[in-house]
Image (cartoon, rainbow, N blue to C red; front, top):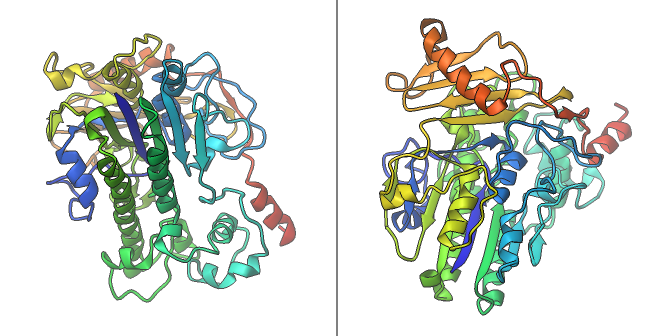
Length: 477
């Protein structure tokens, strides 16, 4: 049996399928895939955001609480837990290649390839698609992309503030057609890998698309589907819209449309890979998993983006669809599952024995052998900064979501009663001290110490990308 895993960055869990908040977004390929799959309605991250969750998805081990002190010099983003895979943890690719699987890795999630990282462990071959966000790929003078930049930021241009965008636009300056966009390049490469390795079965392929992460930069026609007749600036990094004041209602609608258009564009290219599976007649011997690392806020609570201040389902919940050749089809599972459960579940389905995982095999939820593998989830979201590891955590069960700082006494802890407040807008923490105590105890069990916790990991002072350093020096800041 083969295995293909597709991970989409910043993909909200309330888009695909009927009856969701964002079901109006056009995702025909993912909708069709979900109808053929098992849909896990309550899948959540374990440690988030980007690298933390992928480490758990690669090893089956928790990334939270943050506890490692590795050399991270040379890469940027020094959030808690933002580091390589620990040497004592096996990756699923290593496990499978040692059992005779051909293993491949196609990704443009550039954080996984920065200095000191090791996410290629166990892959026979990999293709790093260059150019996302602040990936220091292509050089050039900023004036080369000055006109494009002016279409995405307010003037006068603050070069230092927008240095990441400058790097991105330099990376993208020779883009001419849809096929040149990054997610298209990822899924075209993955389709080619399948064609090249169709005779190398069994195989394991991990496909990692950084889109629809910011910058929300789809071909214009895709954003126009959700915000037609717009003539203003396209703030592909939403934060740029807030320079010098609040954006207009029309600008906010367009930013929202840029994300939705990017989702639809990603769906098209996911379909390209799914069509290749069909063309090569691989469905009968291939398990396909589609998931994500987290979502993003689209003004749900008044702003765009994600982070420790917003541990709500629009950020912490995952899409998780698994299509097994033997079915079932269109089957919904309501039990809680998390990102570190994917490895033990996938290995179980491949009949590979492996015990060194923190996660649980959740396939008994599908077969009906059990109704739940846990009655709550603990989610850690890493904070940015230097010093002792910091961040916030969410403890979620059927009825409550408790959110609190991990590393210090929280002046503004949160508690939401989910049956009466599904959008999690009314903080009732003062009214239910016994629930707070229960949820804190659950979190402390994962931390292995009382709150506030003092974790072993020390994060370095955040270092900017090299291009940002250059821009700061070049323009006299």
